[in-house]
Length: 606
Image (cartoon, rainbow, N blue to C red; front, side, top):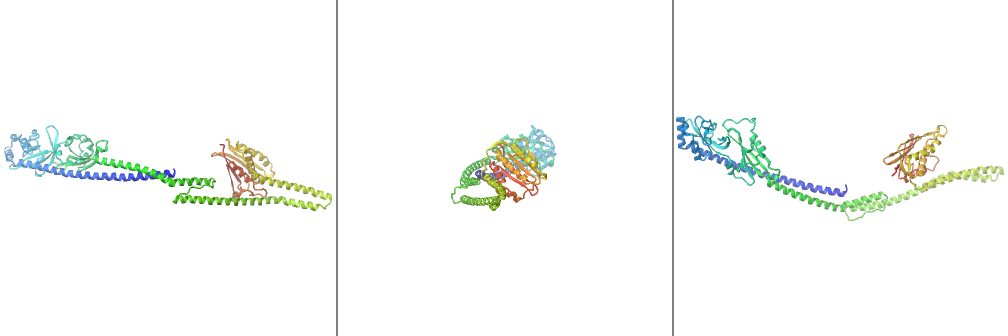
């Protein structure tokens, strides 16, 4: 990944991360604000509901008090106690309920049985446990059964009729139904529902234990100010939680798949005197306004993020022009310098850090070029000095015998003819031998200075090694006594094609084999090996000679360096030159007393 791409990615991620963090924080805060508002509105409605409930309770209690205080009712109670015959009063409750505007009214005799019922006349003589609640004087919730088999939730009050002993009781109440909910003050976006429990009517007996199984939820029992609730089943988990625990429950109810249609609902259990849950009041506040606000914030965040990313792209391009492009130019210039182009320079613009780096780079390249020129000049001078030293050393050896021979001839001139002829023959032989030696020395230096350019051909490394082995194996076997040299082979079976000059490669391998044979004056084994590895051909020439020290291995390929008493020290330099001309490498592996291995690696065919 380039610097430009990294900058673009960094800037884009920074902008996107910052916008996402801000948007998330705002969304959470918006939700908290709306939740707090919903809680306040719910709490306000609950307080209003309680006030309305108390108002209705006071109305019911006042209506029953007025009935119990009427002379007509007092007389009825007295006669009922005296005669013990309830038959004359079977329809009295209906008349009294109509006069008092009560939905429910029952007259209960001294024995606790119903004398007259406005809502269900057939309940005559049925026991009514609720009459025992007269001592509390407090209105209470009760579920009342109706003739059609259904039941209704109502707010009731019980009063004893004065003037009769034992007491006759009036139980009157009003429904908690749609009209009750319609009278409640509801805020915009709020819905109020009431869920009435099913089952037998409540009594004054203690509530059943909490371990008793809760009755199954019935969606038909949930109603609002406008009647049945279409999505009643959606409220079941919330209402069941309030019914089970007897405590307020709060949850988000999703009426459809759209978040806009969800509501923040609170379920409030309504209990009877014994603590049992008779009904659940559900208050639902629409979340559409909050969801819409969140969507607007999210849309703004997306827009800001997109704009920020575009700005990041523009900024990264500008930064690339100011920073990454000069750095890329520096990188390319460094590669060119590494490839040998010492004239490479980079533009110097501005006064910033990148420009300082460019000027420093140009100055460094100029200094390196000057140092390289001085080093090359020093190396050339050293090479010429070494050449002169080596040449003087090599020429000095044959010149000394030549000088002695000439001096002998000069002295022998005064000898008799027969003696002079003998000295002359010996001297001319010596002169011829030393002159031939001089020609050999000069020829070796000439060969090193005139290495021919390789003429590449497609050859097989196995054939080249076989040719070298066949040439020197006979000579090694013919070595006298303990100096016998044997040849080994570790050559792979598969073809090893390569593009090389067969004569130059043969000459290089021959030099290595001769060096190996010279390193084993007491005899030994020369091993020729070859294999293909990673697209290259690796050839090895190993001996079992005395080996070399690390210092000798470092200087072994230096021209004119030799570890033998005779020789010019050009053989391995020539081998290295041949290998380099073939785009290959040569290395030596050796240790004193452990033999020596020369490793040549050349490119394979293609």
